[in-house]
Length: 238
Image 1 (cartoon, rainbow, N blue to C red):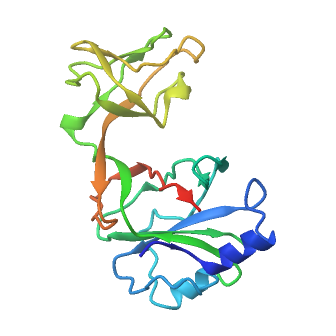
Image 2 (cartoon, rainbow, N blue to C red):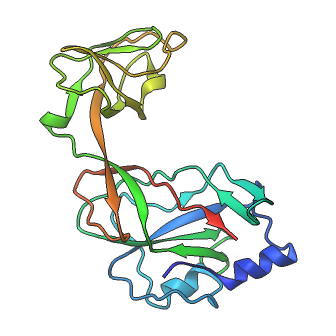
């Protein structure tokens, strides 16, 4: 069940919640073995964990800080929208299933960190496919051009594919970033951005095809080696 916790509602109405730009906001993931049922009366993260909530426990998982907080008032439709940047949880090992995401205000520890909301409904997760021969390749050059062109022998990509680039030497601005491909030739493809102001390519680099995975409800086993490159949150409105 999705929901906003009463403590957050109360803090917001009384002015005690200084959330926009001055509070550390975080997200945590609950795994499928959780028996926790949303209770709006719960106040702190510890209340979830002591009432059947089981947090994801794979070695690579850590709670993430929310960034890019924006608040928009829509007087025409009579609602206020609170939004954030997408969350990057990094590589998550196989063997566990995500059940829900919980947002909270960080304050010292779980017993003092006020809850904001719990989301266990539809969510879109963009996941990088495991690096296998058919979905990854080696980079041997990237041009300083508009748009930049990547050289990768017999890449086998199709225009519109999305690739995640890493480990490039020299032109480091392209690393850990996703690009949409336009095929130029059997051995080259454009990444759709102006790279004239980037450092010159010197060596190395790999690309990996990124495929969208739609999770509905939020309960999907994560394949070994899969990297959750972005996790767009549902927009919160009240």
